[in-house]
Image 1 (cartoon, protein in one colour):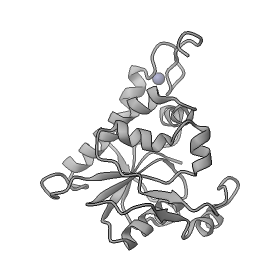
Image 2 (cartoon, rainbow, N blue to C red):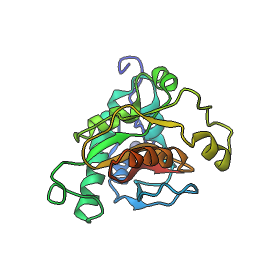
Image 3 (tube, helix red, strand yellow):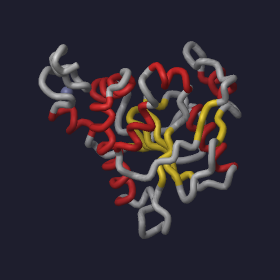
Image 4 (cartoon, rainbow, N blue to C red):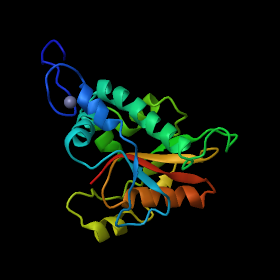
Length: 206
Ligand SMILES: [Zn+2]
């Protein structure tokens, strides 16, 4: 594709690189605690509001087969985890004998296929931390588009199922959080299976 299209920054659209210097700088800001309308019952951190650079990279990650951006945002996620561990907000190797495992938020299989693989799982793998894709949506779940917060919550209650139980403490990861209903359902099903959910990290909050 590089031969056909001029390379543009995923964050701001400037020509030149996959991700320009100023956008990298914006993504490097420390994660902030966010609270969603639906209580996830676990602490959640976001790398920034869903706008500008953050919105741009999320849209680019979703593009079919856009592995270049996914592999660049992986280290951004890893840096956020390290930062939270340094602040004592997430367990590090000293606190827990088993390292923290990333669990990607569930993606509907069909939309993931259309995008060329699940971008959130690719993002987690690119972070270089242990990853367990432990969750999936039940097939009966409706598309969330057009539903308000309460309708989303009802739609997603009991909507996430465990494919297998991860060992050790986990950190949920998603690209963007809006109501928090998906992450709440994910945290609930993991906790019910006896898994320690240390929190959730998202690239952006809307
Ligand atoms: Zn840029």
